[in-house]
Length: 335
Ligand SMILES: *Cc1c(COP(=O)(O)O)cnc(C)c1O
Image 1 (cartoon, rainbow, N blue to C red):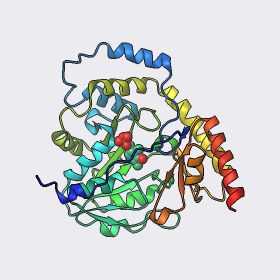
Image 2 (cartoon, rainbow, N blue to C red):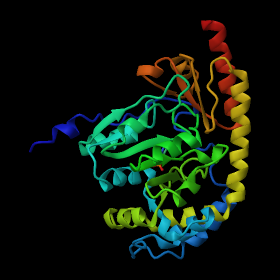
Image 3 (cartoon, rainbow, N blue to C red):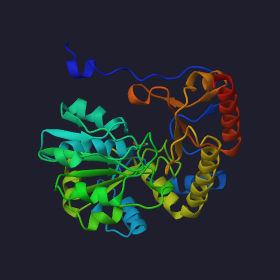
Image 4 (spheres, helix red, strand yellow):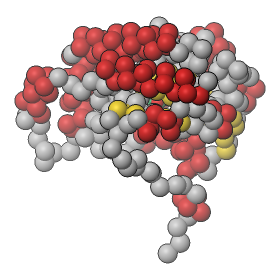
């Protein structure tokens, strides 16, 4: 038996052991679905035949998402998390490299490495804006733009996104956090058939554990994606739950407004250290990872260019109060 060298290069997932009280490390929604709605969902799930495979092209959920966005079902594909769609998108197009702009979401390079695809990194500038990615569009399998960007929280200008689209290269626009931002660029799908917009139910919709993501693109791209997707990757239960949450968008919207308000409250407290954000987290120039961990608060830390920074997910008010208190203590001690 010989395990491939590519696989050996991957590190095992680490689970943080310990008695932590507050989890602000994964950009999860702090609110679970309320019990009444969960019960309503469980009632609905009773009608699902567990012995049958899920709908092979997930049409009921695709129709519901299309209706929600004002597109057609043929413009939408759903996946087992948007992570699954990223891996499919890397297989779809010809080309010898992908373009990313670091610091950004790790799954683009994760899957590229797995597929043996060359990675061209055109780092974001000092204000975390895109640089000359257009120069690397020739023969690119895909150019990844994450907006709002994880972990920096900022969005990219619409004009810049259009300029990248004008190269004609496939552009994957990751809008995982778009519900917390001012505006989306999903409408550009009608104009540019080289644009794929990725969305997810994991963040604003509070369904990270359910694993549903989707992509919006031209009918041609979605058709090809549907041909290569594993037929039954997304299970019947998760699909139905995502559909039902779209019926409860008023509740989702309430939570989004709460999180944005809390984000701005924390930002104002740490203006000198935090970067403006249009997502459900804040990046801060504070080397406080260990300090917070000792106080039972888990956030994200980084290496490389973001060494000494933390990314804090916006939690419930009480959690944010504790975070603010701990960070103020940190500042008094360290600065
Ligand atoms: C969380 C996140 C996703 C969503 O991943 P899922 O697989 O749908 O849970 C996608 N892109 C970015 C940038 C993210 O931060």
